[in-house]
Figure 1 (cartoon, rainbow, N blue to C red):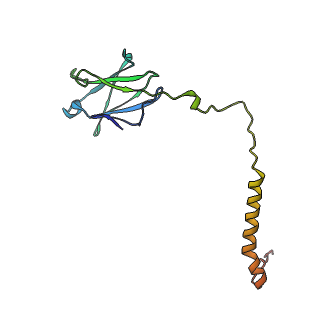
Figure 2 (cartoon, rainbow, N blue to C red):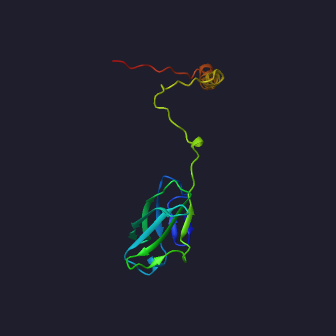
Figure 3 (spheres, helix red, strand yellow):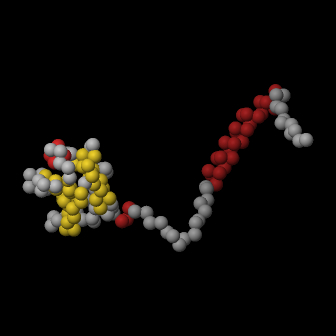
Length: 155
């Protein structure tokens, strides 16, 4: 997914406490930089600032980063010569979404598995379908005399 010109993520949404792959094909890549680093932090105050060297590929520079449980991801790029790409001094800022805990299904580890019982009406409808199938298939053969019983060949 492209969220900004020349910046791509491997996911549709940035979700807190997950890992995301960032791909960069901006000016530093286009100017054939040998090394590019992603300088990133979280929130409006750039909390937990980190820097990571990105891997150079044919498709651009790529790095995987761990997202914090904050409201936004802020980052910029620099090469080995301290030339920066910081979105014209505005930095690249993307919102981080949060999964509501009430929507997450918790699996109980201490409970015994319970058997699910099918409704009686469902069971009877299955039995009725099987009976109708057998009548349609075997009854005409029985009347016409083409009903051949399989003979077992035991030696």
